[in-house]
Image (cartoon, rainbow, N blue to C red):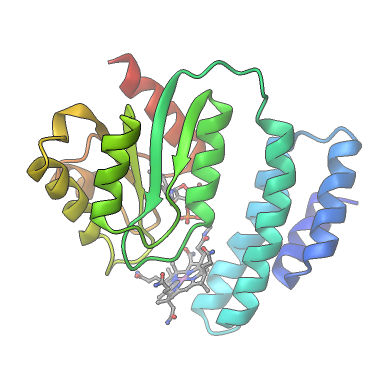
Length: 210
Ligand code: B12
């Protein structure tokens, strides 16, 4: 039982083994964050380049993603305390035409463990749905994820829609995802960008303190 073994089973897309190993590591007292980073996410770091190089294909990547999700859900229960006070509200989603949600889910989980209430709208979320959610939930922060260069412009569309609906000054907007950068955030008028989940939660804390 080790992080390496867990990582290998994520790559293999072996969901039941990932569940079993994650539970065993937690029971043995391993740190939940390390299980996530050195076991689960480390597996996806191997899958990424293999997918890119044509050594793995969509069905296999989906199996890995499903195994990863199951592992993350178990770690999440250990990480997210039920008695953490709510320090702010965040609406989170992957923008229109983009189905990637692994990174978004991790970001959501880190936000929850930092004490935020997170309303996750899922993937392929159209501008109108973000607008409705901002009206309904009145979040402190709207967090947008995109993994495709072709869907990055949809982040700007959400910001434009906020402006058109008179909501832009009511909510801070942060963005993230592999192709996104601080430069892009500045370009589209977002309030913040973070490269990974832990710094995303830190950024949210910083923004609500402003
Ligand atoms: C898994 C995966 C898939 C899975 C998605 C499963 C799922 N449920 O998410 C499937 C197989 C469905 C898929 C499909 C496609 N994919 Co894909 N996919 C990937 C892969 C291998 C891993 C992405 C991932 O989960 N990484 C792990 C997570 C933890 O990292 P992350 O997402 O970057 O998130 C972190 C940060 O970015 C940040 N973050 C993320 N979101 C947010 C939000 C906020 C607010 C903040 C602050 C931070 C933040 O924090 C996260 C945690 O640290 C990447 C390759 C890669 N290396 O990125 C390609 C990749 C993203 N996919 C790619 C492509 C091309 C596609 C397809 C078009 C392929 C096809 N021809 O069908 C489709 C598109 C489907 C669609 N419409 O969305 C390309 C994109 C190229 C580009 N530049 O646009 C990539 C880069 C692969 C490649 N090199 O070719 N994919």
